[in-house]
Length: 227
Image (cartoon, rainbow, N blue to C red; front, side, top):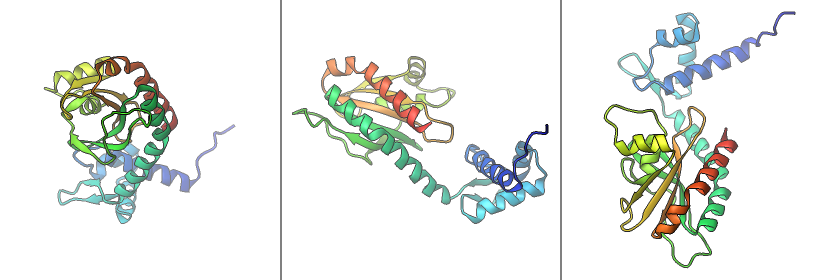
């Protein structure tokens, strides 16, 4: 029996989505012939796919003739961020209450670590307060180190990033908030989603020291929901 072939419309959609993915994952953009080679299609087919994606502003053709991510991706990214935030919210709340510390969900945006969500424990009389939307340089503090560790190794990277990638977490002291401990665990998300991590912030050393197992379990739960 012959295997069922995908309908032409479904095949075109799949190729278009794959072309978008290839452009999005190419730091220097992608040329028509490169996309055609990756998709194993004729150059004219690749050109039509890319033109359609450009019509919807998902990609743009820059003066050098290469295609790069366009403004239409921002709306999709906003939706992804919303999905990740909603999936993580109840887990962050449970974690903040059980550990008695502020927990943030951070993502990487260029050279910054950005808080998609921040939850402080309602039951604690004293805690550090952070707000969603807060950001700091990605090369500072446990959260930034964990986000960099979630990506591939780079030449000359900070030894702390290499260590965090090896051990599965990062810890720092006083790098964003004076006198505060930070412990962060990367969240393993599917390819194409932003790098993300869970980040605990506390002034109490004993909470930071005991937090790792709970942070790792919470990160696994969020990854399972989003996958």
